[in-house]
Length: 618
Image (cartoon, rainbow, N blue to C red):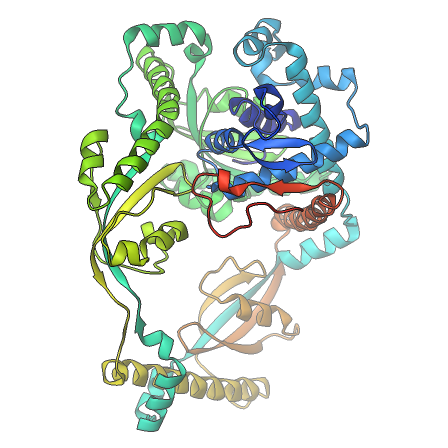
């Protein structure tokens, strides 16, 4: 989602993930009342992290970047390292800062003002006391302050920013002349010795890996949820306990953003607005091209690739100017220019959901199914493990007992980058003598995405080596392509020299405008760098190999500076600075491991037995 969210709105988004996960990061172990060796999986200093913390964190991050249990655990460890450091340095926020941050959260506001009733309703649902919430909020504010410190630690001068942005705003018009390597094929002879040498040097390339056909059962909270029937009484109680569902209207909006950098002059704003108005005219002329125009022009990198689609969101997420227009549009309607502190936006409403009694009831049913399935899934997995272990020659008894469906695959290869075997844990469980030769079920494998799989091999092919006769034609084609590409390159480099000396003329075609950021996907990034490294003496010439083996000679016709791209390119400079700042943060977190002992008991993470040490000192 794009950055058009106020600072505290960003804060609550991260905070609410933790809230819905019962604060997996902040001291959950202290609430559990466990003994000394109480089932924890990691320890950071004196703070313990439990499997419940990992499960809740993964549940809270559903729909965001996929992570397995190990990734989630290491994320929790890194955050706890920061918290330990903050606590030991007696860092704190003032009562005034805390009050302002809480009052600024949209979830506690009505018509832009803090609503104590909403605050108390939230505490009633999520906390036993306000003190606990305020303590967790204070902790999150401190982490935000630390992140801000590292973000601002990498200084970029205005002069450098302007010069670099201007460099990125350079646009060159180039034409092309392509030397096709296929024209040289008839001149190339591949000998038997060449074929034999290539075969021996690339023997692994001609090995067909082991292949299997599988039967498997897969269980997850998501699949179980659909099988759970919720009573009307439970739904009515849930609706009564969660009145906020009645105002659960959400809109699916796409937008095209024209960024206005902080401190932009009136002239710069006018240039950016003019560009936005040009694109708005194209949108109005052909609304069906909205996604295409968003991909081309939007400076919100997070949504541009999806045609500007931000997905569904409710009230209190976007800044007021954006929100008021988004919720006023009708489905399919586009807006005029909408100005926010982030720039100019063009909006399109794709859909609306959640604002009718049927949707509200469905939302309640889904939440209840989700809650009950999460409670049920571990019991089902335990039963699945028991049945398939005690009856190892078939999946049918487990499928019948647990009302599951046995799925099957066609031939899949070991090491396949897609499908079930892309999961290394499952692949390791499958390719064993017990499973391949004895035809037993695998153990139940945690797939790392909230699902669990047990499988068996129904058919098997061992790895085989293709003979040289099997691949002879393939080798000949490869060697011819390599030699032809080299011949095209030699000719191209000679032609570039003669063009620079004015000795020959070629028929250049397909003139295009290109920039250093590589917006034209038809030109390789390496060629782009050469194009912009060529001195300003037009027409100028350079050349480069393309991915298909052809050699392309570029005639550079002219150069201009696109001032409308300055804002976007300054954002790019700032993103680069942020990346360096994150490198500094990562180094700092790494150094904290010298101050706080980190130990693991990874055998307690179900399915985490991947060879990682089970008790690592630091």
